[in-house]
Image 1 (cartoon, rainbow, N blue to C red):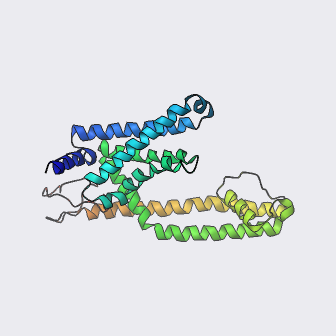
Image 2 (cartoon, rainbow, N blue to C red; image 1 turned 45 degrees about the vertical axis):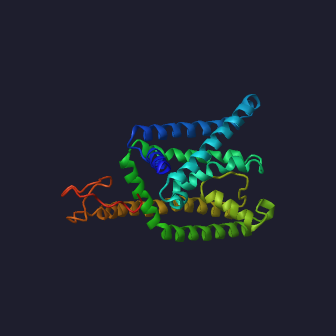
Image 3 (tube, rainbow, N blue to C red; image 1 turned 180 degrees about the vertical axis):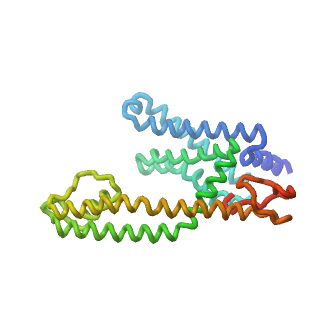
Length: 274
């Protein structure tokens, strides 16, 4: 019985933000996350590594052990440990400690610890920025609903890139740096994405004409997914508002962060991505 009481107490502190203890825990956690990411970034600077490398290494292991214990405690106090482990934050929590242990076998992998920065997203929950979470729900739903359109679009982009790369290989040839179709495809990717490293460039007039078409195509490509996602965001906002239908009076014109029906005061159902 005492063990269950302790478990419930820690669950309320770790997963809840409605008590001073819970808010303090999350605030200290965020400070620790920022400090650990800063330590990893500073350790990558040669001058700082030479002078304070041992201290930063010790700090890295300190934070890793701390976050490992926190992850284990979260699993222990969670009502559904498997659900937490498979959730977004659960996966991020696990990935944020693996690189340090992996560095014992793969040198340099500890710099992947910067993934801990994702844990700072908890600040939205800690500060109770519900409106931001509502916007996040809209964006998430829009991305889910556009996944097939984006997939078809990306497949079309790949086809266009292959065509441009193959054309450039035929027109320019190995003597102008386009030594193979894969290397020409690399040039097409760099050109269409408007990065333009300049390590390979067409020399013939016809090749430059193809390059111009690729650049123009690149700007057109940028606009397509923007329009798709924007349209779905508008549709997602309407869909999310409609899904907040009151189970008592069936009124559905509620704000995304509303918890109670504005007509009868009944508790509203959760959003599908809450």
